[in-house]
Image (cartoon, rainbow, N blue to C red; front, side, top):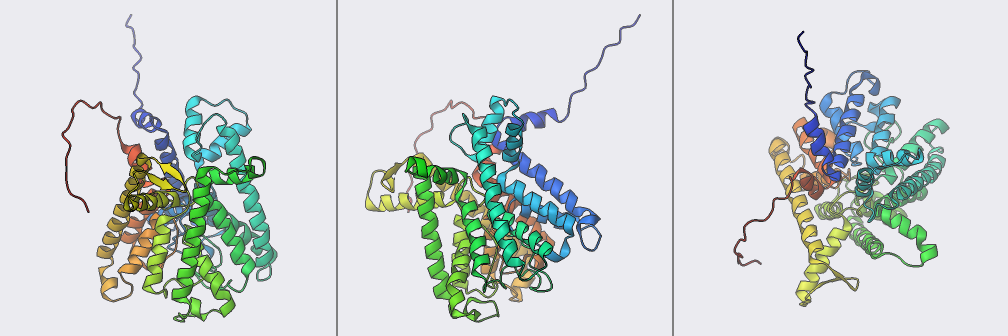
Length: 473
């Protein structure tokens, strides 16, 4: 009697699964990819668009990436193009993207009181950037509670303000949507209707300081980061702030002040359009300048016309977007602490200090090296994307429809996950959209983290290389 041997079929996906699970950062990045693709497939459904036809893969992928990476660049008006189903998909993507799929999964994991493995704790720790994984699930529950509480309060205030212009249910929908979008620094809104016009954002709300300040406060809180939130909450008991929190708060205040003063001074007399800063009543201009500085910290809402900004203002906006928000926050950019470390190191070198000093604390040179690597990678991504878009949009540049400054602002906005545009992303060619998609993705997950995730295991150092000496500067 013949013996039939069972042949074990190898799982073709096992090597990929093992590779992803090898490093926590790979799992986090992969979770973003899965969410983006799932969102794109849902937005492609005819039920998602007002025309009841498919939005197309590239358009759906762009919006899904922009929402998941909490950017805010759009190629169609969110209010008028998408149905209620499409808008629900977008706001869910924004919420998942703001918190991170790993954080949300860990939250439900902890609520169900399931025992977590060491690997799960490490991945969760990496996701929320907490220094220890001992109480990581306690931290996750606290973060989610803070997020939903702040978003709920923001939604109530915004619904109240919107109810003066829209029917209650419509005001409620717009209020909830904007509260989540604002806190997650996404920049999506539902104001492009028949009253305000497509792609209008908050340009028709400058006469309502409560709406502007509420949205601004949501942006600030979201941009401070999970670590700073908990530190501020514990301040009443501990009466002290961690060094990281002090740096973040100081850099945030400094950048907001510099941006506000610069924009107000440069744009005060600009009356190029109805929604330029100089066209607003005098009492509205300081608040509009403040909001422009604030929204450039990775939010993407705008209350003044971006297309008519002076080139100097566009450059300042691009710099603010490139710096971005704080680490472990819903914002993007190279992060304000990275910028602070670089500036402090340059200053210390100029003064002849042997060590880098920042707020009377010594900064390890390894931190500076990592900061420079992050900034260098970010510059390479932004400049490469800008050059590629300039090649694609040669005809538009030749016809002076927009210029290089606009392209730079667009690419920095994508990488910084901001969402501001002086071109109008929808007017760009689809090939340019394809360039901006990886910019938004890399800006959200971090260029250094992405590079580390792709690296293989470190090989043992077997050779000792001679020291190279060259002149710099």
